[in-house]
Image (cartoon, rainbow, N blue to C red; front, top):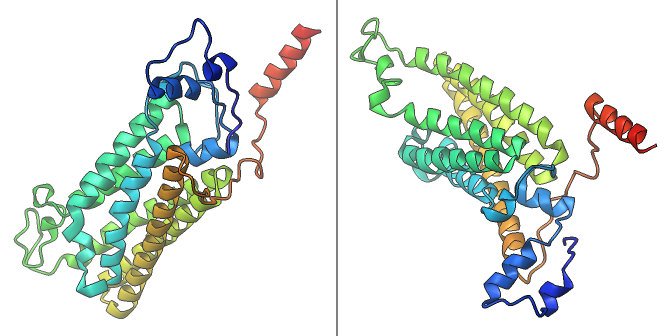
Length: 292
């Protein structure tokens, strides 16, 4: 599972080494463990990089928090888009779930990844955290995002008494296109992480694309096509949520060292090699010249 190099003094004890509790011993052992690339990416969602300091051994791993927040927030939203058990309303009923699980936890996880020097998961968590905040607060009356387009024209700034719902849907559809493009960029970045992560972004990008189509068709009165596209959006988001729960379980098994087989996430770090940048080549060349 992990390449572990233990200090004999730590394991057997020495005249100068004494541990009062098992927890202290486990802490000292943890500082001597070298994670394999596969296990590191399973826990941190990014290829291992050298960073200054020892924050990774001092602080907890923020990655499961981000995965947890995304998964819990997107799953009920997906069910609402699919209309299960009479649900609907664009997921307005779970807006607070999106704010606290999807928004707050993802932002906190992004800050944690920033402190640990994990750039890619930091960007992902900040990006999706901002999305859940933006989407959920759209339906908060204080922001007047929906109230502006009230069908009866009573919203502040409404140009008249005509139904403005179509204008809101058409305008919001462009935001979903932007999220589709962002998710596709994340998909490209995840090609060096693992297959589960790739599939999550693939379903997310597809879901946002279908969502934009649903909003555009509904804005034009094409209810049948718009509803089918919205159902497809929910199906894609639900698949992403299921994969999120699977990935969270895989991380919990690895973190807690449970005596059960690890769930496969199909690591890609050793399959897709990193590109050597010019700076790295120059550094290697300079080291070779200085050593000769």
